[in-house]
Image 1 (cartoon, rainbow, N blue to C red):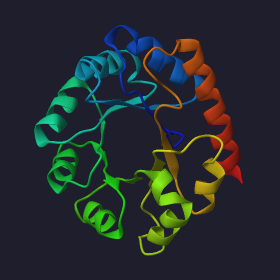
Image 2 (tube, rainbow, N blue to C red):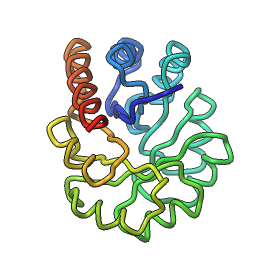
Image 3 (cartoon, helix red, strand yellow):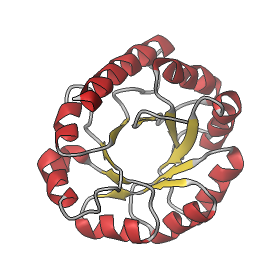
Length: 203
């Protein structure tokens, strides 16, 4: 499955809206969808979304802090793991389960720890603190083939700044979903994000 490198982060998603919100994202062109585990009944939302959309999207979990979390996400149908930190045990278990691993990194030490333990890609977080200049500096010492995502402050208005320093993609949180946001608004924001991403990716 070919994906745009945009991960929609649905913190606070409720079970009864999971399929509708995720379907709106996929219809708009975002096919990497993360449900953070500190959302209400997150594993059930992952299960519902994966059952409905696994042929069209990759559903995964965020805020994954333990090996048990990884196994529970796998059992629910999730196919990737996003962590807020660089936890070697979580990364190794994710890889062992045949899932993609995107740990949160901030420093070169974090980044190389993640790479050495098998991370699929690196989530620079919080990107708004590190900034495109900070990411550029860290990327200068990283293997060029490692995918890098700007998360925490990235939005369609600044995608170009992160693309310019070599970021592969983005994680979008409150920009694309907040509890109480209508499906129509999620859809509209997703379309704007896709348009900005496609423009930057071609530049």
